[in-house]
Length: 370
Ligand code: G6P
Image (cartoon, rainbow, N blue to C red; front, side):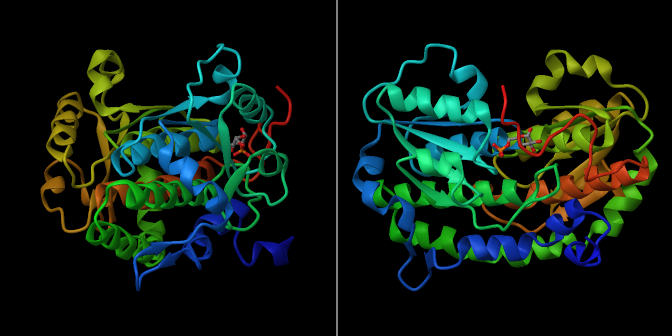
């Protein structure tokens, strides 16, 4: 086991740290920058149906569901096709309406999650074409879908999913650009995205260098039992995934939600020193997020912020030791970076509290029963 851990104290930390390489593997051979091409062999035969599709339904559970939610934003924003993400467990039982030209996208690390498999079967029975966004090669979901794109991030052992999440978001980004390019995007725009995408592995590497900085911040707040995670737009699913990571391994109660929802109830929870994590990167909703931060500060909450490099304004609201920076990228690509400091935050909080990060109580890596 020590050899497999490669010098790291936990699989989770190892998998967080190997994300630059994992994302490089995910991208390898799939992006051709010379003629702004996206090459996805696994969906080649269904290209026409995908471009013609009137709706995408993304489905999964847990972390995969959160990746699917980002997919919903990506498909609508970049591919300009209606999309929604649903918990597989809800979709399968709610007698869903599947219109013609609907494509279901099953998102799963293991490819074996019982609810996701059942949702997939339900959608297929009702006539949807199915696509897998799966890590485990040869898994049931990968066999049962009509087409698919593997994550290629390597095996994930840590129960709390990290590199698979980033891999899922990367594949969904590639899929939405693949469609966007064939539907309406100019070559220049696709080019711009692909250039930024290919920088992501190096940029994740940069974010990872802040691990000690994140650890120092966590030390100040790890004793607090209630946290909030807030974000808007593309960073809303990142916030709920950040909260899930913290719950899973540190057993701290955390809620993630769209930042604007806070004032519809959860703001009542905020008291002196309550940690509130904001994903507050530069983008169309930055000012709105800042006003949410002000509301929390006015009530004594402890602000922890993920911000864009070079943002000096954020210092007004959070102390430097609890600001984690990510490089400046287009909004649609931000989740690939902003999710990383939140993984480290959860990891360090769990270690600080003395928990076995790789064997969280009550959890299984793969939930193959209902
Ligand atoms: C379990 C794991 C989660 C995972 C979820 C979905 O609950 O503990 O980390 O996100 O299943 O798993 P999948 O293999 O379908 O991605």
